[in-house]
Length: 353
Image 1 (cartoon, helix red, strand yellow):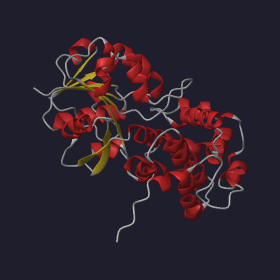
Image 2 (cartoon, rainbow, N blue to C red; image 1 turned 90 degrees about the horizontal axis):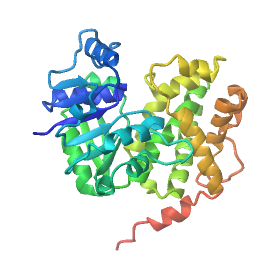
Image 3 (tube, rainbow, N blue to C red; image 1 turned 120 degrees about the vertical axis):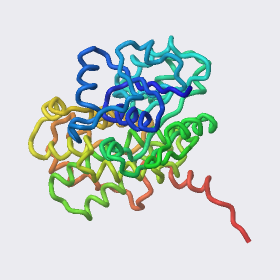
Image 4 (tube, rainbow, N blue to C red; image 1 turned 90 degrees about the vertical axis):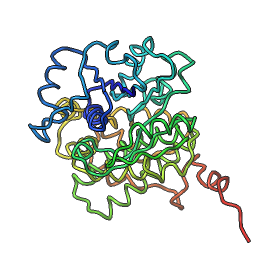
């Protein structure tokens, strides 16, 4: 029997558990404490959405990891990026047979700068590393929980693995596409949070739609340049996990990263904002990691640098925003060591008669 384990009681984790259980799949959701488990059983997947929404009977919540992982076909890790390594360590000894390991986290590890699939691969037995798949895309949990249509991408180096995850997660309202560019899919999902922080600043300052459109576009080009430098396919950033996720997180009031950007324009400190939030705004740490990666590569990332100055340098958002889209480059696809033109030429379609 198909059974799925969810590690992580984040809003996205409980949402994935909910829609899979609604599909009739037995789901085990791991809670760290009995108090957390009791609160989840009482409030359901989203207490802010509907007080009457409860988890389907196919989903059970347990604090016993061995019970949640017993005879499961796939385990989905939906945890904050900075706790992924610890969770992967807990998981490692329970893996068996052909269990799929799915990362649904969107972030980069501080210190190592590694993507979540890389972190997981380092902590689980090597025989399971080919079973790793990542899940990303414009997936605001609350909308999906309401049954609104959405699309995500399942990506694995082995297309067969991605298709297995696709079949498991697809529902009438959730369309799952596949992709084998794991680097691009993960980086798109992580780096767009930096752009969402800046978009929140743009909105908080009332700069209007023209400025926001320009900022989002420049931001997408910038993170594409970093992605390409790290080995991603440039076209991945034009898809759901790049452009699609940028649009969602830069425009939706449900976006935590956009919220942080807006609150910074009100004079609130970053620690104050973060401590008042129920979930994690991954862009806060991703900005730090991305800038470190860019500096090591000698890569120009002006938007990321300006967002970093606001987050960690106490810079005035208004003064920074005025320079956020500026630069000395003449062509919109050029920047120091971006290499976008050479990459695009490499992927140029051959001429046909």
